[in-house]
Length: 136
Image (tube, rainbow, N blue to C red; front, side, top):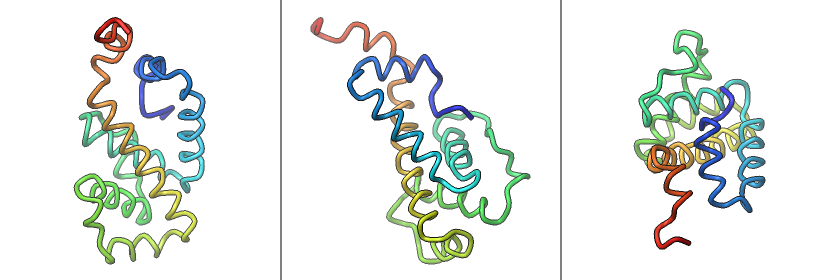
């Protein structure tokens, strides 16, 4: 998976704030790279599947026990991040060290924000940023 957004959608959003484009791209790349193993791709795939109705890019049949915990974490985070219980974090700790867990949560939060933003603005991105209200 090359990224969370298609090139045209991301370009349209970043065109509205070109001053932030490099920082956003760098932050996304760092968060993705810091997440252990395939966890970044798993988080992105599950979020896009649930929020945007896309086919999963990571097959459930290929997940190991550690990666299944990441799927469970992603689903709970999306439903209610405050509802993540000790049982789930204990399962996470059984497979990942503290630095990896921080990286997973960071990527999870960043991905959640971008996928939700995409869900809200993606269909209208190009046209709305090209002609803002009031002609600004």
